[in-house]
Image (cartoon, rainbow, N blue to C red):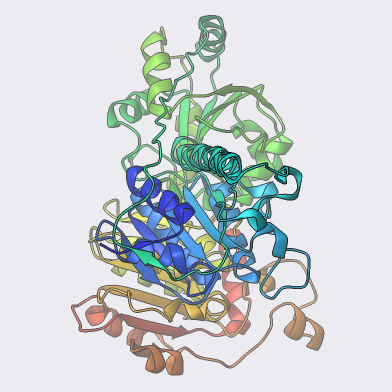
Length: 586
């Protein structure tokens, strides 16, 4: 087998292998050549070559998101590393184990005007779980850091022993730092950065490994819930007549059904779920904005809970945030092994447990169900909204709203649905999703950048077919996502093209002015047709309801290439249709 000659490269590669980081996304470069040589010549690793570092990082994020396993991205030195930052931030806020491995110049070549050189140390400081800044291997005296300059030795034997001692210290430091970074990515589910300095020559190889790094394993210690805290919460729970469980972004099949069934029995408990929650029960309440947006202030106060329990990642619905911030619950408990956001300004208890572990400790100790009409009141609202929702769909013209209704109904069983941000995820929240479909969206930072790359990475990492629904601006922004050789044939893209940032027409502002059209909505007349031709993707476009339904009949069928359906909607009426919807269902 071929290995890089540089000891530090061997160390990084062996520890990645020992810790089962199998997927390696590499962007071409010279300074990272020792890593590229090592990863690509070992059959254990599944390597991908993606030129655009921003796309590469989101592609890796999609793999890690789907597999729930650390995935590595590898780049050269300089600004290449900075292009990872959007995906690093998304991984940080979405709890995704992304391992960034960057090649760097030696310390003596930094800050002297050398090419492709920036200050890479701690570059992700505010959005990283751990930064491992490795040290350069010693080859001769010129590589010894200034503060460790060698004294004048009386003989070469002493000098040689000194060099060996320094190299051993450096090797120990590097092994410790790499172990710590990868362990933390796995334990805490988040991004880490390993910065690896290399000196030339970079391309030399050997047939056998020179180093055998120490593998440091860690044991995860679960914090026990203190009994007095649990008892206090139980006392509040057993007396409260209005309890709300609000679930944010949640991985499929993460919560045991027996706990969901138990919660569904209690008339004083309502469970609000979002599309990204991946939870399904007839008694739960979906489409939160549909439920809440038409409520009067008096109704909002009446329906606000005494106790709020949250788990899962970030919440999409702005309406529920507004309601709970204005009519704050007496108690807010958040369940998460890692962090608790005080989203509603009333957080008082953070249970550092998984939801399953918390419910296993808590629900069996609930002594009785409180007599309450809380769920029935919410149920009456839900049924009224669903009836009006159905009636509204029969009255509206072809628009973004009708398109999402049609497309979401068309998705076959057992698909993966990746949603773009902005309008795409917000429209998706208003409709019922087939319970066999798993839903993902980059809601950590809620940016439109990288959505397509993430969806493709997710598609690569699983056998199920993947559908990506996105807006035109988000798709065009990340069009380099298509510049790779790994897009599966069963990958499907739906672009809802309303010729600009349609969500800004819904927000307060002066619409239909030159300033608005140029700087907010960003009008354009671009399509995906030529991009699809360039990247070998089957393309189809529609602009009315009948043609859309006809196209969807064959859209998911097997083909020899990925397929993209671009749906053109009339931008001038989309906002009116959506805003009128909330008045209609009141």
